[in-house]
Length: 237
Image 1 (cartoon, rainbow, N blue to C red):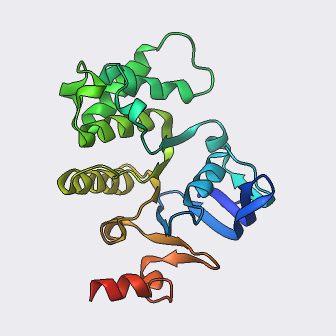
Image 2 (image 1 turned 180 degrees about the vertical axis):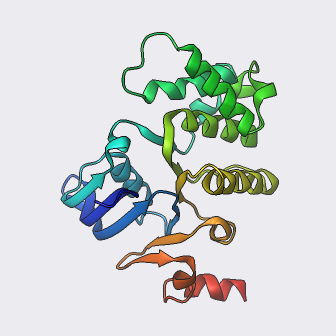
């Protein structure tokens, strides 16, 4: 494999109980990529993320992951449930819990892990919130906390499932700017499922469009020139 390849899908089919949701997927995620995953509801976007994370085995084909991803190095930001939004813990406790995903973690957090959690909170501008209760925060603040938590688990790759759901426009744009910073300045690869195509394409480098009967994978420019990108182009006119 190439040194900069993080995940490679070869002719992959994914689904549940013998029923395929995605078929014949070929996809390569490289270090520093910013991949935007789009498609209609029920097209298989969240199923894909489960496959990329190793939570769902392929029905056929192969999903190869770099050794560092098998040891951790990937942070996941799922869609929040109401119960998770009301989680009664401090911001620092939530962020620090991201370290639990790492192999060899002991019962007690190390000084280095606590320092890293504080550093990630500083990167995302929430250090002053560290002693506040997570459930008392705004939606945008909660997403920054969860992103800080994901950074404690990740060193190479962030995977996000509809991260702007429930956010007001200003908070959503703030989150996009943060993701672009992490991608461009920190070298973090980003894979993001989103319905907010217009905003997402400003930061993305590549697009995976999952259709009912077809798949598109390529650069943003190629996507905008493709039949799959036609609906987006027409909506912008």
